[in-house]
Image 1: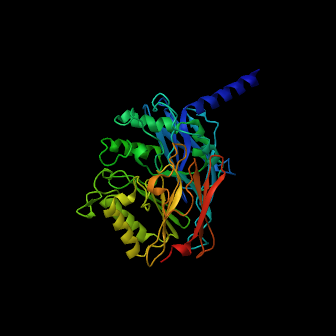
Image 2: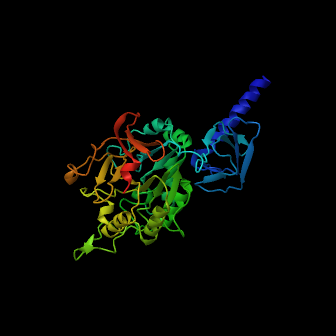
Image 3: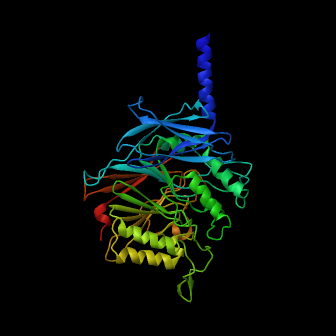
Length: 444
C-alpha cells in the first residue's frame, strides 16, 4: 500500500509540474557553447529549475534556477545555458515550484569546424502562414486554418533548425488595437497541442510578416508596433532584434550558410503609396528603411558564407504578380539589386513566404549569375492559387505548389563544390517538388 501511495504521489507530481507549462519547451539557437530554451508557464509559477547534463553523464547534473518570476497573465521565458562543450548532445528537463516535469528535451551544440575540417552537411526546414482556428473570433464560414498535422510531420524531420518565414500566427479584429489582444494571440496559438512536439524537436528562428505584426498589410503606420516587437522578442529566441529598439532583423549562421532575417514591416510604407512620381521611383516609398538597408549591405560584404540567404516575408523578384512584393518599392529594390551587382556578392538566394502557394522565381542578370526567389507557403492557412498575369509568369522555374507544404533545404558536398537541394513536402511529408543549385552557379 505504501508503495502504491508513493507511486501515486510521484505521478501526481509529474502531472502537476507539466500542467504548469502552457507551451514549450522550445529550442532557440544552439551555438558552440550555449543554448537558448523557451517556454511559457502559468502566471502562478514562482520558481523554475532547468536541469541539464551531457546525454551520457546523468550523474553530472547542473541546475539553473529562476526565482520571483512574477504574476503576469502571459509569462513566456527564455533561459540561456552557457559553458557547454562543442559538438555535444545534452539532455534537459524542468522542475516547476518543486514538482518535476516528466518531459525531457535534447540539443546538440555546433561543431567547431572552421580551420579544422570541411563545412558540415546539414538541413533546415522552413515555411510560412500558420493559422490556428478559434471559431468564436474567426470570420464566419469555412475555417481559414487547415490540417495542422503538418507540424507533427515536421517534428519527425532530422533538421538542424526551423526558419519561420512570417505570418507565424494571425491576429484578428479582436486583437489589432489592444496590447492585451496582441499578447493573447501569440499566447493562444503557441500553446496549440499539435505544435508542442515540433517546438521541442529542433531550434526555431523567425521573421514576421503583416499578420503576426498587426493588421493585414500593415507597416510603419501600425500604432502598436512597439507592442508587437516586444511580443516577438518574448516569443522567439532570435540572436538579436534589430538595432536601437527598432525592427527585428538579425542574422543566423550555420556551417557555411548565412541567413539574413529581414524585417519588411517596421519601416514599410503603405502599399497604396505611389511606386513612382513623374516617371521616377518614389523615394518616400520604402520597405526596409535606411538603417536596415545599410545593415544588410554591410553584412553581405562581411559574409564569407558559401550561401547567403536573404529571408524576408514578401516576395522579392516576382515582376508578374499583382500582389504585394519588393518590386513595388522600386527605390530600394533597385538599390539592393545594383549593390549585389556592383560588389559582385556571390551565393545570394532569396527565401520568402506570404503568397499562400509555393514557387521559385528567377531573375537573369546580364554579366553575372541568375538570382532565385524561393517562396514557401502556406503551412496551414488558406491556399491562394496563382492568378491573373502571374499564371503564365515566364520567370517561374517550376510548377506552383497550391497546397499545404513546407520545405527542406539540404546543404551537401566538398569545399568548392557545395550543393543546395530544396524539397517541397506536403502535410504527410510527401514529395511535391524539388530543385537544386550548386555554389558554382551562384558566382560572378
